Length: 163
Ligand SMILES: [Mg+2]
Ligand SMILES: [Zn+2]
Image (cartoon, rainbow, N blue to C red; front, side, top):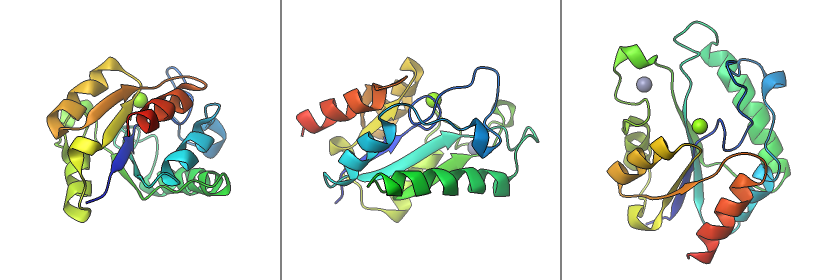
């Protein structure tokens, strides 16, 4: 069984751009310390996953291919900083579609669960809103808030201190 850390993307890894969906790589801005924090998790034996709601896709603002370009660029920079993301799971649906994968539904986590043998009680979800706590509760994951510059660094410090 593997310990894992599930990271929300927007607001945890990259800066929220209020009212703007991140539809191109030039709108993606890493928060300070985020890449280094991911590297610390990777190097401490955690599988690191990203679970992200990307309703811009089904709103018609972003294509799956466009999202892949953004994610490939992001993964490149994370790897350059010494980190490794095991896999990214995204929900393309709008809230009104009532899908089973848009957080706080657990579908994205269920996908990871089907592919990996994850030790849930010893694993974490990192989100930037108090409402993210709900999905962690449903999955039996520990939860920690992180937002803004330095937020993920502080969260990772707490996760590693809790080991
Ligand atoms: Mg978020
Ligand atoms: Zn969905």
